Amino acid sequence: MTDLVEELRAECLKTHDFAARPEGPTAEELGVLKQDARWRAADEIEKLRCVAVTDWQPMSTAPKDRRLLLYCPGLSGNVAQEVVVGMWTFDANRRSFGYWVSDVGTLDNGFAETGPWIEYPELKPERWAPLLACPVKA
Image (cartoon, rainbow, N blue to C red):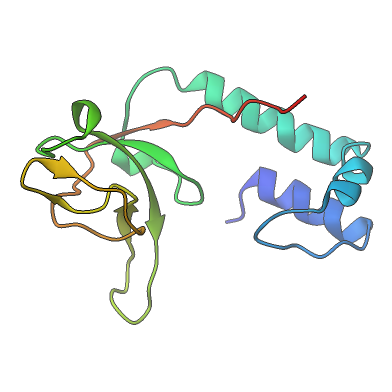
């Protein structure tokens, strides 16, 4: 089942004959898309979803299409209160159901080094919360 936000954006891109790219629309395309009611509705839905989640949620409800805050009890080292930024990923060569990854890096000897997005045995999230939207550049 396709998410409503994804569906609205896909229809909007199709109508305006813009290609869907992982990095998103160009600045010029975005100017056109923001005039479309479907694109604005998708933006509003995303804002409301973030506001609606005001507490840590169970992992069974975690969206698997974006980065999230993950509460991982048992993480040690230079990790702020066992919370990391992570996301769900799928690798058909490794697992059939996907797994959670983080950019925390090496989690040993009491330190967390920034590294590639990778699965760590210590990363066993029990709760999630949405990330705040990035500040808009003036």
